[in-house]
Length: 540
Ligand code: GLU
Image 1 (spheres, rainbow, N blue to C red):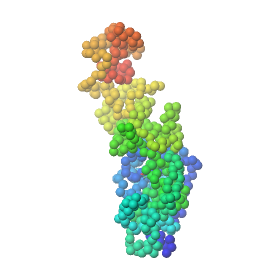
Image 2 (image 1 turned 135 degrees about the vertical axis):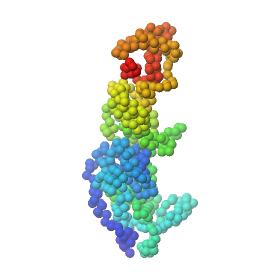
Image 3 (image 1 turned 60 degrees about the vertical axis):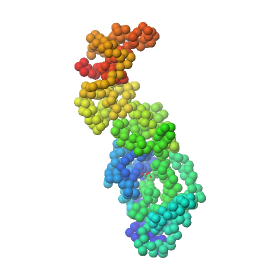
Image 4 (image 1 turned 30 degrees about the vertical axis):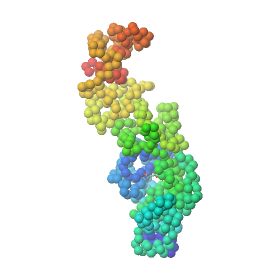
């Protein structure tokens, strides 16, 4: 019985002419350095920070080089499938403005010439290559039951041997064609394994674009390439898909690093050129002086929905991801404040091999800085969009007092050094509520400072209102009046005068304006007091 006859016996309905696919998915016509890469999640719906980070790097690497970034759905493990899981992933990518050039655009639709981009739709392709390998004598059926495999595993564990189907443990590798034919005729179920040509005592050296040169023992395990449901394993699908989709760079989490010898071996066995690999370390978090992986369970910021809920601008999250991705980005950005991420070139060599440390304070600082440079109308629109979803009472106020709110957001904005006070849209209300009568009720706490007894406060306010208050004053006039008021009550006109001679005064003009500020807002920290008073107007 020839290999060809064996292949026909095992996979009678499969056409093993792989030249069809090689022709259908030709080399891409792109620049020599163009990166073709993919985001290849399982359809579990939920994109967490780790995968958002990976997809961000992948799209950046592709788009910086006029390459291609595509979305492939890896659903060969049907158990992991979640209803509308693809939609969830697509929405998460959209929310972060990570655009794909090819791949899935909904649960069932896709764009691009290299599809289908969902693995379960590629069964014919995988099986053609599986059959081809059997014909070439490079793959064989394995009839071992799950129990037998488990038994072998236990024996290996007991004897402290490597776990797996290799060497003398690879029982079915030694079956003759006739023995196989017998089993098939008896209807025994089988899977297909590839015949590893490797030896564990030999070393291979691979270059990873992030981790550098790594030496591994060669793979000698006859891994499964086709499961009993006819679908491929991750490893085999990776090799076939990334070959046929003409991926140049496989950028993925470093949990796949140990599988790399196997993948490279499979590429070679198939006669394909392996892609370049870049394995990303997980994002880390420091807790009690120790580093650990950012955890979906423990860290709210590990979920991408967190950023939406907090109202952290997507642009700021991406700036932050860029600082995590490339260690030289921050410095570049400091020197190129007028530029955007798109002007910065991603560099694999500048990715930390040990994993970036997630720093929430830094993220909020970046966000604060980003928001401070937005136009007032944009702050308004985006705060409203956030509030429509998370705080409808505030949204109503923003809509009722639209112009007023925009003017409020414009205080100390749209200038060279804008005021940096809002670190995210969800925090804005807590910083400006006092400007809305509807919210200024039942105030419990007034943050009076130096001057905090009722009598002094009342005297200052009374004198101000009776003698100095005129809503039409310009800023200089207003400020001079504050100084007059200070002087009249025995406070220094200037902070400097007070500092030089503290015995001579009750305090200084700043203490007086603080009384006004707190009386109006209850807060000791606010935007420019004169501007606030102007905006409130006489009646308010
Ligand atoms: N489906 C794999 C995962 O979700 C993809 C790994 C890869 O990018 O190759 O981990």
